Image (cartoon, rainbow, N blue to C red):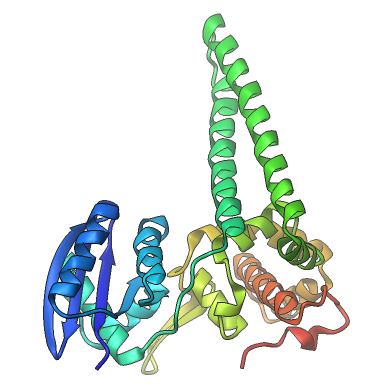
Length: 326
């Protein structure tokens, strides 16, 4: 019998539910190396040497425990939170506590048997750190630029703001150069970058964000699954013959992916023939502008999946190569 370990992740602690011979055991541990070692001793005290550990993909807080368990030959699954949320809704899961969430994750793991996870390569981890750092610096840069235009009149403060803006510009340039160096040093990443930037609408930064935040595109069975991970899958609401709400995106996935696709979608609506054809069809069926932009974002993600899966650059005259819906 396979032992299941459901893990609810937060910044400082982990709530775990161990399913062992039909019985459930709960433990709360620190989310650090000391806590991980305690977890290992606790499992051994239960005569458990191998588990199928499952957790939600909640960002960087769960990475260390996932890697720790993976390195010790446990089977690890890191699952889109939307899947577990829908599973909980189907089971009328109502309690919202860390222990209850860990129990739900363990039950989901036992019933659904999600696929294995593997850690990101060192190159991707470094790229992701650079991408996130660059986004932080750019946000600070924009804040300081706004302060310069806010009506501040004190000469010392204005000089200090100007100095900080110059410094942030230098750090932006240095971080961008380091990102370029990562691609230069990795032939695999360079090939993926070339494939992604062959799609009109994608530049270096967007491609870097997709590679850094998604990691292994092959972990997704098809393009719609990837779109769902980004929260770009449509949701509809129908009830009988009288209740109807407009279809909208679920927004249950990674907001960072949706954010990075917005401006590329605007560019693609002017310069990418595949996206332009989609927009024209949607205009004819009276879709409003925001629906078209979201559809363009989703199409770009499908195209990204397509070029990476086929390992062929974007070809506007061969759209069938990007049909990976089944």
